[in-house]
Image (cartoon, rainbow, N blue to C red; front, side, top):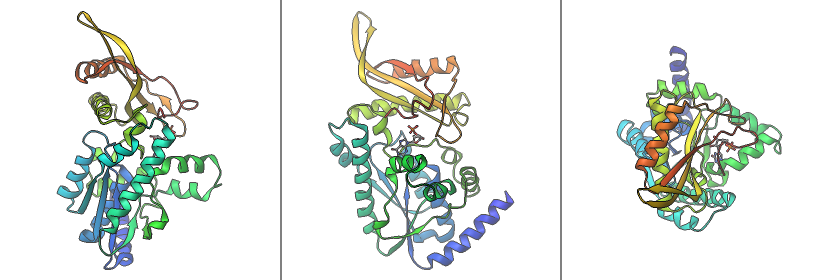
Amino acid sequence: GWRMSEFIQQEVELLRERVGNNRVICGLSGGVDSSVVAALLYEAIGSQLSCILVDNGLLRAGEAESVVTCFQDHFKTDLHVVRAEELFLKELAGVTDPQRKRKIIGKLFIDVFRKEAESIPDATFLAQGTLYPDVIESGADPDGPAATIKAHHNVGGLPAELGFELIEPLRDLFKDEVRAMGLELNLPEEMVWRHPFPGPGLAVRCLGEVRKERLETLREADAIVIDELTKAGLYREVRQAFAVLLPIQSVGVMGDDRTYDDVIAVRAVATDDFMTADWFHVPYEVLGRISTRIINNVRGVNRVTYDISSKPPSTIEWE
Ligand code: XMP
């Protein structure tokens, strides 16, 4: 709308003034906030923006590709995709404890990001997608529940000691305003409405050991869940949905043989703020299509279950 385009124009002027002839680095995750920050900066400073995507091998199906399509083919940004799957999977080998997974991934992310950022000459600024609710939370009681949850979750955040000056152009905005800005900047609808995705990615949805072939199973099942919800017109109403690969096998039957194969749990929630959430009443027919497609197409899966727990006391993620 008109007011958003005015606001963008003002922000663009401010950014140009602040950045001058310097270079800005922006980390991309595939998520809404970082994408909008990058699109805004591209509008403001074009070739003085360098974007970094760390492909940790824990992204959803097609996620790295859609970032490349958007920020290299559509917006011609200087995009650095760091292919770090092998490194992450090596460090995660044999690790099953959820908090250890998070720690390993968070630390590696910072190492990999720092190394790539240092290879970009003359970078002065680091742009981040901090929103107004994040600003309020960090100003609130540092030991309060909101702060604890943020510290616990924000493995993807970058520490100040990286030595850049911070640019946070979304600091005054709420999520719906960020989405409106993204649309005004011509980001694709799928990117603007994408469900949130945890920094540790598929690792915390791959219960038990995180191995390449297990991630592949999970990724295929997850893509089916999202595709069927989208086809049913439910993707936006469901605020977050995904597949989880369980760390057990279950018995099945195929012809004259018994199988002993993987189990996929499907999670879909309705929520306003992700602090509380209700399990989403996905119609039985849609659940049926999800189950049939996963069992028929994803090798090594012989059972699908639907998670009917609300938060609290359950969390949205399984670990
Ligand atoms: P829970 O599972 O705590 O999740 O109900 C609430 C929201 O936070 C996301 N989440 C994370 N995000 N790093 C993140 O960046 C994490 O380690 C993490 N754990 C959970 C979750 O996807 C949901 O949107």
